[in-house]
Amino acid sequence: MTAALADAAAAVLRGNDLGHLTVASPDLYPHQWSWDTAFVAVGISRLSVPRAVAEMTSLLAAQWPSGMIPHIVFDRPSAYFPGPERWRSELAIDPPALRTSGICQPPVHSVALACILQEGRRRGGSDRRTAEDFVAGTLPGWLAWHRWLAASRDPEGHGLVEIHHSWESGMDNSPRWDFPYSRVMPGEMEPFTRTDTRHVGEVRQRPTDEEYRRYIWLVDQMVAVRYDEEAIRKTIDFHVADVFFSALLALTAEIIGELAEEFGRRADAAEMSEVAARFRAGVAAAVDPETGLATDRDLRSGRLLHSAALSGFAPLISGAEADVLARQRELLLGPDWCGHRALRHAVPPSTSPAAAQFDRRRYWRGPQWPVMTWLFSWAARRHGDAELAGRLREEALRQLGDLSFAEYYDPLSGQALGSRAQSWTAAAALDWTA
Ligand code: 2M8
Image (cartoon, rainbow, N blue to C red; front, side, top):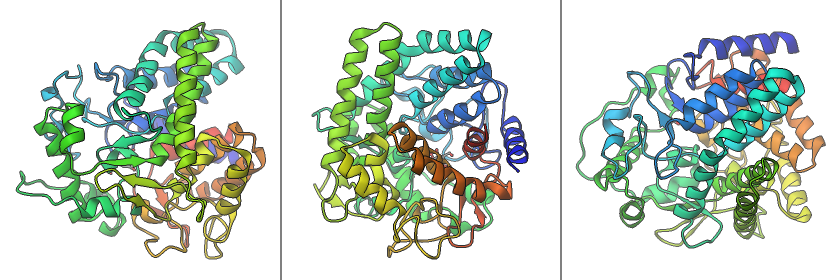
């Protein structure tokens, strides 16, 4: 079974491979996405270290002069909406060399660097050299990305990353964002036609039209100020502190710091270790003592955004004090989450099935995302909890046994939902079966 799963996963990644980059999925997402690329590179490194390096290299080529890694790189025409004509990255005050979107996504990239390096060294020979040269040669670019996040997205040093669009969170329509979006009131705007709903079985597996109007309204607001970060902070209608993004920054800054140290960049290593500590503290301070879950904050109203979303487990990603981790672990495996009696597979749902907002088939409002299971499993191992890592892996492999490599799954029936042949799902399967 494991061999069949690995073969099928490899075939998905080959099918989505354009040569130098892998599209996030064949029809729904026919371009390169930022955090998808990191997960995909982890999986591909199990097949070919040079190909994994190429994946990361093509993403880095789209880096903005500011240091931002954009969330989508458009390198060929397609019907995806919103495409480069709506994003208009060429209008940015300091524009990127390639056509990209104008926002970012959570940093997972140094996880990919660490995995590529580990795999290259395990294989030895030219793979080892390729991986080491790549990491040493591109560290300045990845450092600039982390630096930009720490400076531009947390200018006051609270240890929480602010975002200007829910697409930046990667969890587009999560209940996390219901309140901030209730304050986004689109005015007159250029008309548009969605393309995403053409590629899924049922429209109800995707965000609503009302949500899309708000998503595009925010894009237009950013274009209007030519992606000037300062102006965006003042004018954008969606302005929140994202606890899950912050946890990933804590984790990935720590890894970048370790890599910098290893490759003789002492000052960079110290700087990244400070960034990691700052965001780890920010995440820890955002844990609600009553629920035990980490909480986002709406920066327009100052309101805390309580929601039963998977992001509440941010400390399991960033790392935290032992008592915090123990409580989070218990909650994650408990009856409101992985241990919920109606779940087909005991992996984390994107929203708790015990919550009023839970919607078993709608995107980030309930379904289980294998790539998130992979992330929690990887982080658990890094933070010394091999037992949790192994449990999640085992359950996830059962879920992936249908070989559809779906984007997400109905937690109650186990049915595949969203896109099929999703690259990051296949990548997770490849890493788990290696
Ligand atoms: C989804 O988001 C894109 C917009 O970025 C979309 O719906 O068109 C999200 O699941 C996001 O996290 C993911 O990176 C992207 C590609 O898989 O799809």
